[in-house]
Image (cartoon, rainbow, N blue to C red; front, top):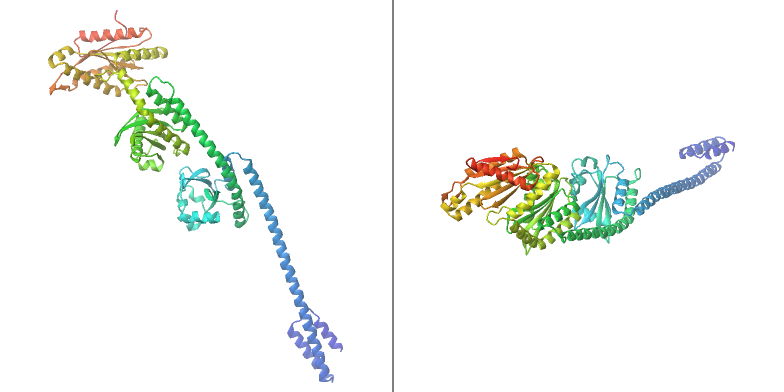
Length: 591
């Protein structure tokens, strides 16, 4: 029994394997046989050992199972605790962000805050908010994107469907690079876009906007948790955004209405001429839309190649630049008239129509009356920034308003023009010229600047009437008047050069801010042009020459307009006395 108990102690060892049990039983059996014990006692001892091991094994199995269950429970509790801590941290973050959103009274401030949260560094990422306007997604605000990225973003139809059901989708790899929205970004922006998160903003169960970002928030958190946070935020943010959008919409409509009333009140004021009213109206429209320049063009219906700018205003341009700018405007106006609707162009769109310099953005609105396109308003900007919705609304209203009033304005302007013009030559008549020269002389005196006057008399004009008839004489006057108008267009002056019919066959040219030397060159060019012009009447060529006398205002010698006119008249008399067909000048009135 002494050996039995020693082996029993061995059996009680927790890690005694089954083969060790069998070996022990065999050893006990051998020892007892050798000592002369009976087979029954040996078998009984073996059975007791075996049963003891079975009981031990069952107890150990139960203990191991209990330990495993405890470990699993401990792990579950630990995970649950971590989730609680994580949820608490996320809730704190969410509440903090929502408090910031609620504190913002402006829609743009809310979006700006959201962009800064999701894109803390523009070197590493980018973000933008797209506002849905008439099924187009236009950039409302952005962070980190270049100006060359498109102003309107396109979505794949499948992506829009996903957004409606999932609220948040993430584009990566080939799916991202093949998407339409990825192609809307500038090449400089694309290297920072490794993934693109699309977050839908809702208004009454419809997508009213999409928030795009290359990052989810906060950093260092599992993406699924980031998505859950984004979804919860968007539910609250959508309410705030929709509320702000309603407020912004109300403010927008109020502002547009106020600006329309301002333009209407301006047009209802009393102006010296209808053209001045158009200039003031157009310039105020330019200011309200933040445009560089604004022009009003008139066109004959169904022939848009014959367009003419009647009013333009805006920033001052050098002569060569202004010519190219107006050529671009003419191209854009013809484009708008052909389309028959508002046309907004910028960047690449302008280049596609041949406008590759000077103008970065343009907006054209045709003037339509009785279903006929009679002209257009053209707004242009140096900056490559498309015109916004407010500018579109204002130019639409302005074109409609002018369409209804322009014919009346032009009729008044035409009557005024006829009152100021000589009926035969189309030049300014004597009464208007006297008023204009008084004004120009007064400005020259105030500024101590130059002012020159040229008087022109057609040589032997009475002989032309006697030889060829009075109708031929009228034709000679008309042709000489056109020569003066053509030469005037070539003169560069900060003020308007004026040509007038001074009386009978005598004509006059007023040259503000042009001194004696410049006036003499101009007079000689005019004299030579008249002498070399081919003037025919009834297939008969009529030789025509002219004598020109000029004078220039100087503070020392000229005290009044009458002195200036008398000096020019004296110079003209001198030119005739010296043999005609020549230019003479005086700087003071003859005694």
